[in-house]
Amino acid sequence: MPCPGQCLTALLAVGCLLPTAQAAHYKINTRDEILASARTLAYDMMLFYKGNQTGQTPGILPGPPTEHKGDYYWWEGGALWGTMVDYWHLTGDSSYNAVTTQALLHQVGAGRDYQPVNHTASLGNDDQAFWGMSAMLAAETRFPDPPPGQPQWLALAQAVFNTQADPARRDKTCGGGLRWQIPAVNVGYDYKNTVANACFFNLGARLARYTRNDTYAAWAEHTFDWLLARRYVDTAEWRVFDGGHVGHNCTDVNRAQFSYNAALLLQGAAYMLNYTGGGAVWRRRVDGLLDGMLRDFFPGGVAYELPCESRPGGACTTDMLSFKGYVHRWLAVVTQLAPHTRGRILPVLRSSAAAAVRQCTGGRTRRRCGFYWSSGVYVDPSVDGTSGAGEAMNVLAAVSSLLIDATDAPTTNLTGGTSTGDYGGGGRRFKSKRPKPKPITTVDRVAAVMFTVGVVISNGLIWTLMMLRN
Ligand SMILES: *[C@@H]1O[C@H](CO)[C@@H](O)[C@H](O)[C@H]1NC(C)=O
Ligand SMILES: *[C@@H]1O[C@H](CO)[C@@H](O)[C@H](O)[C@H]1NC(C)=O
Ligand SMILES: *[C@@H]1O[C@H](CO)[C@@H](O)[C@H](O)[C@H]1NC(C)=O
Ligand SMILES: *[C@@H]1O[C@H](CO)[C@@H](O)[C@H](O)[C@H]1NC(C)=O
Ligand SMILES: *[C@@H]1O[C@H](CO)[C@@H](O)[C@H](O)[C@H]1NC(C)=O
Ligand SMILES: *[C@@H]1O[C@H](CO)[C@@H](O)[C@H](O)[C@H]1NC(C)=O
Image (cartoon, rainbow, N blue to C red; front, side, top):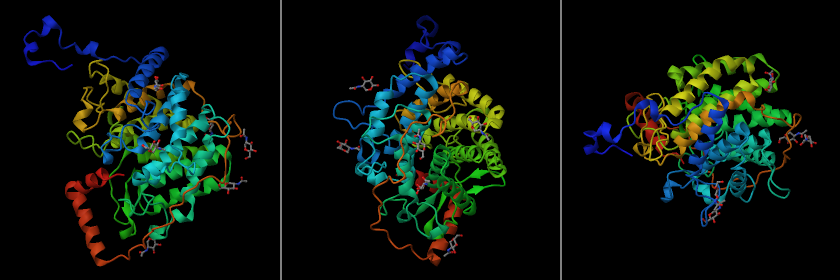
């Protein structure tokens, strides 16, 4: 509750402002403290979820904003269930397993490949893949298998992968790669971006390790090489950029660096390193991506969303406000798959989580979490135009991931995984209505130059672009 003006005079008498030392609700010094904190954070997180209430749609957070139904796009539901699968795996608390299973199964769509017709208007390859990666995580963690006859976790991940590897989803512009959006009519169909391809890479690397089928590894390798060749990843300094447009053959690289792009690649590279039994190429990539990650996204050892966090209120979109949680969860898994990274990653996950909980002092409960971890001061999520699900998910992820050392590494088909696969899965192909790629014209070239100049001057177009996400 905010301190009303008249109370300032009677400050000490009524105790309206609590001393800072009492403000922090969450403690994370011992395993028991972490478990207790994670339990409350999970409870508060789930208050944002209405999908299992009468008349609501299972799986999704309130939204999408384009239909004035709430702050959240469809994909963030997929990300939420990944967070809850990890929460169960890390803490052993199965309180939310039933609601998680219901959610992950409700959204599979008619093709059992996470392309439900309701969400076609915001269906990017990355959106579909976030659900697919959560299904993959369920297989890897041995999250309870759905009853026979229902779609199985591994098969769902394979189905998502198959639809994205399908030639119908690919074309020759920019030397290959996935577009951002799936339906040709969606805004952003002309953008071939890092996140779409990084999600596909991540999923491929994990399917390779889980099934030991080299076809997946070959796709992962090919996709990583494509990102390097487009200069979406700068291997001199290991910066991961956002993407480029087919109208410019992807040479108009938008240099915005978002933490989740770098984390998707780092985690996927760790899977490939593990799969290849410690190959030098993947080790160099893991180490380079980790250098860039710690340098750009953990200044002072605290998670920081570089492209938007320094800008005054509202510069980070609802999507961006959820990235820190994925970064924490995926880095935690990197320590298991590439044990040589432990000494560098674990202390940072700890210092960052400590900063995260320090600012969870908001709301009537005095334990609501905001987004700005470095300052240690709670900022109400409404300043950024959201109700705070991403902010809550971030802190839950950061705190529960502190238990990674006492938790099993991702299983495989050979090390206890029980999920049933299906190499043939995947339905809707979105073959129709693809426009012929435009030849590159002088107008496009001028536009490309202006785009670059615009970015240098103001970064304004980056924000426009990211606001148009989905
Ligand atoms: C929805 O899920 C939450 C969390 O598992 C649970 O507490 C609640 O009872 C469920 N509500 C309904 C209507 O099933
Ligand atoms: C699609 O929307 C309808 C109507 O809101 C809803 O009943 C159904 O559960 C939704 N399906 C999915 C997969 O979200
Ligand atoms: C587009 O880029 C690809 C990959 O570098 C290249 O093979 C192709 O020739 C380029 N196309 C045009 C029209 O420049
Ligand atoms: C692969 O991951 C497992 C599980 O964490 C680990 O024990 C093993 O050392 C890793 N292999 C390599 C080559 O890093
Ligand atoms: C592992 O994969 C093999 C080959 O695909 C399959 O026959 C076997 O059933 C799988 N094992 C488990 C536990 O799923
Ligand atoms: C390996 O995966 C590919 C791609 O899904 C599939 O076509 C092939 O049948 C699989 N190979 C084996 C031996 O299962």
